[in-house]
Image 1 (spheres, rainbow, N blue to C red):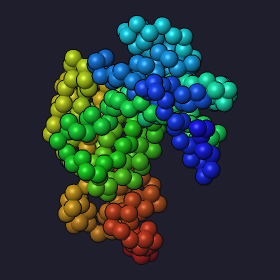
Image 2: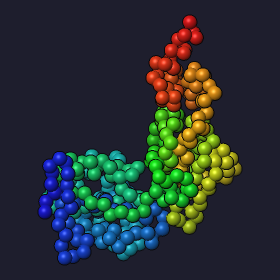
Image 3: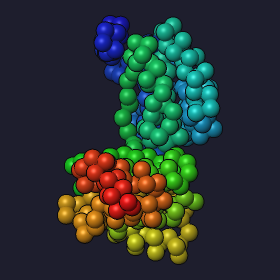
Image 4: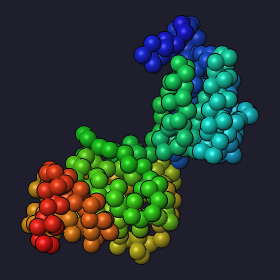
Length: 301
């Protein structure tokens, strides 16, 4: 059965007598271990061993993974710097009937890596995409955090926002979100990010998860102030996932403030412009931005 392109939908081909047979013209997203090699699935190994093409975010990392399981394959790079030309090449081969396995450095392709762009391109081209599920750092940290798992939002790397002002604006945009929030962070950025979270969210509960599934796995549960104090005295090492409590009903810091004081708080503590601060305060209060901005006009006259 060929992929059905109507309404941008595609369906996996019909199954055969061979269990988990690699199908032609299919992109396979293969989840790989985030630390413990034993977490890889037998299905993932089959796809990596039998797909016509193996594309990797970093071919050196991918080669080490395959070597650990005795798989000898040549790989092509698919990373941020070449993703457009690489995607065109992969799609061309998929249209010719070859199969492709995509892996990232660790975890699920498409999460905080350029794999998402390749999936979108394949969907647009009517190419079948299949996922080999497996390890994922964000969900692993979430279920270990002890925080609410019923509703959550993945925010990825805060440092991707670039300048501190953009990071502050991004945090301001989600400060009123009641869902549990999940961030990725590198060790050299951890302390600065924790301080930005404190400024934007107040002292919320947090789980700082380090080196998940590895020998040195560590979960520190507490509040943001405690996490800051800890990493001011302990040098952060390894890769981190931060799981932060969502805004709790009745915990709004601005309840005792006037609308103008609310906006000024954002201006003074997060460095937002007056326009941005009014927008943030309006979002917190559930009112129009003009209602907050009017406070400045009336009192400055």
